[in-house]
Amino acid sequence: MMAAAVIIAAMLAIYARNRTKRGREQETQRREFEAVLSERGRFAREIHDSLAQGLTSISLQLECVRDEITGEPDKARLHLENARSLVRDSMREARRTVWNLRPLALGEADLATALQRFAADLTREGKATTHQEIEGTPRPLSADQESALLRIGQEALTNAARHSGSNRIVVRLRFGNDWVTLTVLDEGRGFDVAERVGKGYGLTGMHERVAALGGSLSIDSRPGEGTEVSATLPT
Image (tube, rainbow, N blue to C red):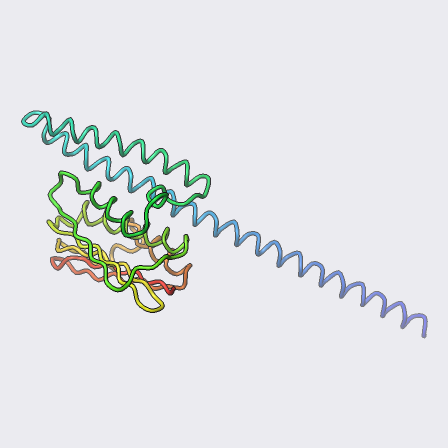
């Protein structure tokens, strides 16, 4: 009886050890799978935010070429040159995305300057004008925070220039004691937010970027009343 008990105890110990090992292996596989999904999501956001916005800017310039090629060829050539420059920038941005580098616009500039340059390029010779406001005392942010806010600002600016019909777009950076908020607002046609989530416009990507850094995003818009996009991150 004693020998049988020892054998049973040994078998139970081996079973428990194997079960624990399988549990650890399954947990490792689960974490690896979640990491792959997270990386895919990050890469998808980067592709959308860099390439899609670049293509939208190029499209806006080419639309100006189409409208001016007959009556104002000099302006048309200027827009065509702008489009060529944007193509080159988009190609460089695509390479940086693949290699997981910081956005090109932040290479030698702070967040406010990068946003200002993007807004100027986006609305150059167009109907809309952009105005930047900075409240509080600007301070350095982490690379992840700057990248996230830049991408969100680019997305919001692109949507405003492309879809709002507004003549004026405001970009506002507010620095608090332990937070920073980026707001992009226009006075355009607005939209029903509930109908747009998950249907393009990068709204889902904006939420994901902010959530990954422990922040919050609000999108306030109603048909005929303009749009306000605000992203807040803890610092």
